[in-house]
Length: 449
Image (cartoon, rainbow, N blue to C red; front, top):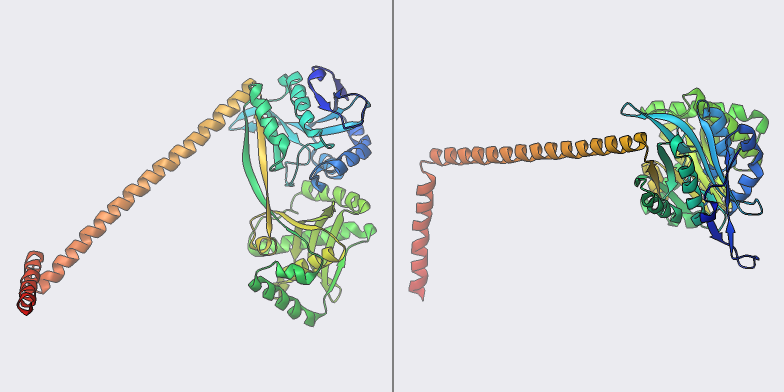
């Protein structure tokens, strides 16, 4: 663990009311070994519990499981910010890894728990109330002190709208480090009422009728809904989930998540830890003691995060996936959960059963190193090339449209000429004939007057 003391006087924060001193210096330490990472579990957990909008994806359980599964070839760089009493007040859980962009070799800093086959949501800085603003200069001072060891800082899958994001971008620019924020995804959620009937009233009438019909149709098979609670057979449940997930995606021709050893290993490590904390939900729907559909959820802070699912395609005619989702909603309401979050993914079923949307962003800071500037130039050139290509394609499309319109006009003109020729007249004669017929009509009107 490395203790960092440079420019600590600049990383100051206001103390809470009632403290003895108006200001306090913050000390920054870097955790770089697995033993220290494992030992800070309780501190991490407490900090997450007071972090605004903290999520299960920011938990020690998620980060440590990810590190065990995917940490090979990477370097821990967890930045811990402490007050004068050594209390952990902010945390930037990062790791370093070699990367490449268009053949350019780079050194990246990323958030723990992001990357590889895993795609979480709602990542970011952990900070006690009122300390997120002080955590930003602490991070930037650390980056400055270690500026020869990184080219890019990538904070991906961050919840949009957090105050420290704008501060980090602005302070990075002030240090001549280009920073950018790009939209990442939309996450669909619903705030749960206190009953199933009230939840149904939040849905469109067509969706409401569909859900009720599918629940009734399934009753003929006497299905059993249950949550998997047997920790001793948890690996059996995960294997079944993986099997059903692969069957579902193979049936619709999509790529499966449970298809790589690293992904499977990650969830084998994560699930027991979440089960121990009461944060795991393995929801099952069975018929004749055979599980035909499963949903893999996480729970934290009164929210249920629907992460993954699977079903037996032979039951697709009975919409067992929809039936199980309805049971999960009913179970969450019965247990007093406040929210159901379906996370990222533009799927119609997520949109129809929710009424709220959150957004996530990716934030990138380029260091003023050769690699940092080269990546910025290459990326800017590539984006300019894409825009230029779109303009060329648009110009070609417009030119083709103009040619097609001219050809259409010419064809219509030829058709009209051919039609008039068949009738034994020409456009000029037809116009003159029309004028001749109109004149007597005008005269007759005058005579009546």
